[in-house]
Length: 638
Image (cartoon, rainbow, N blue to C red; front, side, top):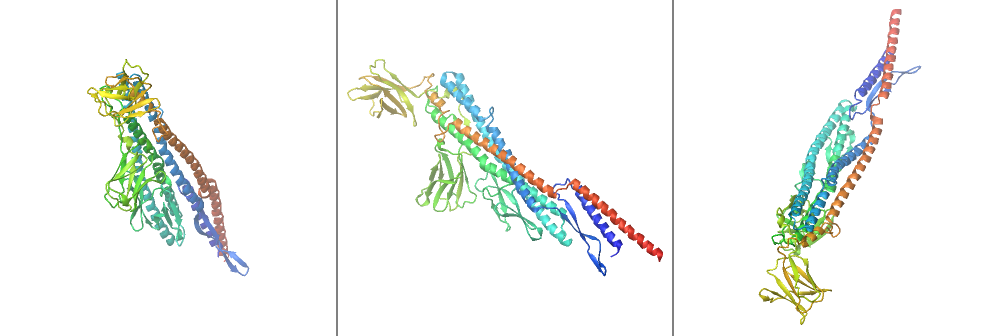
């Protein structure tokens, strides 16, 4: 081979190297760009009698400086970072709402019960009664506002899932298209890799993992197959399969993820199957924190409302009427699964607010048995065999009951949410201060002629309660050792039943228990009458005030305890997620730094390469110049 051709080969190699270096320089700030190297090899030698003489050099290929292991690690770390950061951003909103010391629910509960205590102290004061009504309205307004805020968060997640799914499908289509184009370009280039297209594909996958935890499997020929969830395909070669944001079959109010299968069918993802990325973070936040917080506020509204209403209806107001409901209450929500084969209808009612949990439930029928599953711990809390069922059939547990109007089909199910939307129905009903039932419904007055030591009083009131038709007189008869009851028309034909106590005897009339404690004397008389006109009586209001600290929720928690537990749970979770997010971001940064140390453009290194190839170019130009000079000399000699 001539010296001229050898110099020319070196010149071409140098020019190729300079082109690659220039390409690296110009893409140093390009996201997803992988540094490229010009791979140079000797052109070999030509055999002669005096040995092999070199024939110059050739450019074999332009190769990406790529580490598949680090890139895979970075994808997984990025997916985890976006999952945790999304979760952290979302739960912080709940934490800020619940923990607000000025505008939160806790201070309004304190103010409401302070107003109740004020009425108890001065039940005849119209101002304190109006203050209690105002505090009740403020409390109801805050609970409803909290419910509205949670509903906005639920709707916001639905919207974000819709938007994110669109982006996922855009990226999967791009990856499938790049798979096809890379295969075509590789074939047309005789097997040489189209490096910039490979970078574009890796960048599309990187963006995809920010949205969802996608797994990449590299096939023969370098084609990417991308999977999500439990192995559902998003990309197979040049084909992409959309995911969809669809209403959940068990709860149409919430959006969930569905896959498109290669046969064209759509199947809803199982709960917890889609993880990673911002989509995984949204789904985890909703199932782990948002649902539980919304249920807890709903349970609290039911507990406050029902407990207060029940006690208020055991007293009488300034008009002498039995108290009415102070608060309106929300109702349980039941959704029929969209895949049900029967037209059975299920409804739910609250039976005991003190036994409610913060979980949702699933009522299932397997063709043989009905089961009520508590979703928070996957425990069956109630079951009934279909063989003995009569319809309408009720199945109860945890403070609520579900009624089915007819037999369900095998495999049918209902989603039961006892407390999820209850806070939305919480409201204040009383606007007239005179209708606050502060007084006890009846009283006992002892005759001034009594000689015994008996103290008589109203000690308990329970449902069913009704006021006395008229005053009753209880007169002690020593001959029979009993009290004889009479009204305006004379001795009652049916005497109230007596219940002996350690200190005397109790009589329960119309739901009211009157206790006679002490030693009576013959002829001692007591008058039992409605408490009408007792504007200064606070008997019922004292019991209403005690509800603030009563362990009314599961027998272990007061209203304040339950709310404090919710605030603590959300706060602890928010802090835990924030710490995990910060830690994961640090790990992701470390992996990114390691990946960039291999694949990123180093300006100093490229500058050295630039000088190297520049000198190589100049040196080979000198070789060509020398070859030309030799040739000219030989020609002149001839």
